[in-house]
Each structure stands twice: as structure tokens, then as C-alpha cells.
Length: 210
Image (cartoon, rainbow, N blue to C red; front, side):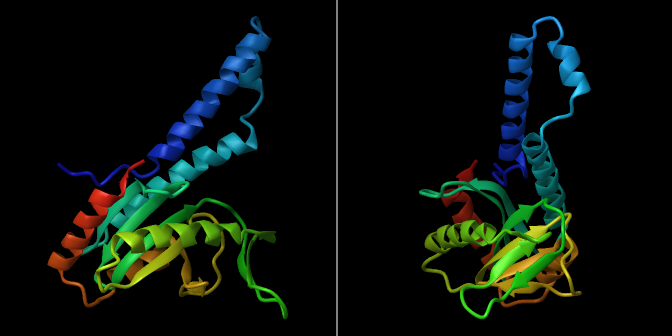
């Protein structure tokens, strides 16, 4: 049985939960006009962000699945990890832990004279994205601790402007748009199809569907 997982499932469930809560509150507070108020007022930004996030994960997931010689797991949960891993791709060049981001704005690295570099998207500090990805990569490395394989994190931006024709790296993680990520995954590498399948099997067992 295939346990690849469905991209965007957990974030879609959260979107639906928030949508249901909002609709229920409107009906309880305004029994007669609650439905009309919901129709007249657009969804709050935080709710729309979950919907956009689910769409972004599905778009990236579908793109990854079309990469030849690449096996993918979606929407996984690791022991002790306070969140989900959007995608894990096992390619000839190694294992990639991919976090999809559907935010808008120009991606930039701020490198101050003193202190650590910061990730900026649309002028806003988004360095916490890297903190979360650090934990996801660590969880995958723990599963594959006995394997001699490259494991790298990647922030895949679906709407933001990532400058340059190739990927950028920060703290060892790739900062990429979808096309650049696919190019990286499709590159030739040392892993054979049998080795890729074996790695996928180990990850599939250890990282349960979220």
C-alpha cells in the first residue's frame, strides 16, 4: 500500500476548522443575519493564509512528483517535532526536506556587520522559517543517522520573488522557487534507484502521515 501522503492535507484541515468556527460564531451572534454577514465580509487574512498555504503545498507536491528518478513523501510528522514536514524528496543527489511558503515579496538575505544573517521577505524578518526548517532537517537526519547521504533543507517560495537564476543558501538551507528546486532534484547524483527506494522506505516508516 502506498503511504506517500497527500500534500497540503493538514493545513487544509486547519483552514476548514477555522472556517467552520468563524461561520458558527457568526450564526450564534447574529442568528438572523449571520449568513449574510459572512457573505458580505471576506475571510480574515489569517484564514486566507491557510488556504493559500494548502494550495501552495499541493502545487509544489504535484511538481515534485513529476520529477524523474525522484521519490516523494508529503505531509509527514516526526516524533518530537512540533509541526509537519511539507515534503521529503529523495533524489539522486540526496534527501531534501522541503518547506513550502506562499508569502509574497522579494526574498533577501540581510547580513549585518554584527549578529547573524536574517532572512527577509517583502522587508519582513522571516528568519523563523529557518528555525523551523532546522528542526525538520534534524528529524530526518535522526531517521537516517546510519546512512551516508546528503540531507539538505529547502524553503520553496511559490509567490515570492527569489532573485537570481539559481538557488541561494542560508544556514545550509536552499532558498528557491519551484523551477530551481526541480532542476536541483533532477540533477545526476550518486544515489541509484534502488538506494532511493530504500531511503524512502525508511523515511515512510519513521515519518507518519500528519
